[in-house]
Image 1 (cartoon, rainbow, N blue to C red):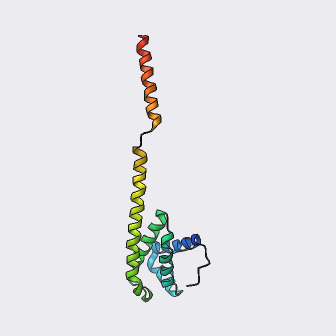
Image 2 (cartoon, rainbow, N blue to C red):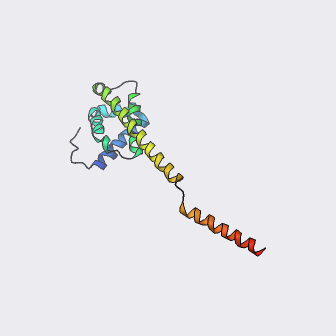
Image 3 (spheres, helix red, strand yellow):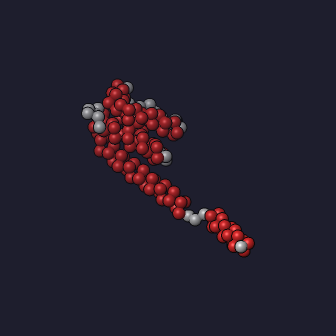
Length: 138
């Protein structure tokens, strides 16, 4: 694979995301293309190097789904065989990171819903004053 050290990280993430999307769409064809261009192992290595920069849930899901679909191919290229254990470890690590991120987001959303709204209590007291005024008129 070409030297991509000068490439901005956001561009690397997008390019790698395209290949992971292609893996999801048709992993066998994507692998055949990458093998033909002799890019398979370089792409996987670059993906692993950049994975810590994936901050959004979508990016992490794309990483997980793309690599998982790749591993489901009936025939894996020889260039991937030495990387299989590390790919599985990376998948497990990313699944764990995604689970933690989603759990934190859900907990934060739940905390926002549970938090009582001060405006609601003011409205309730205003309503009770209104009822009191109606009773005095009778």
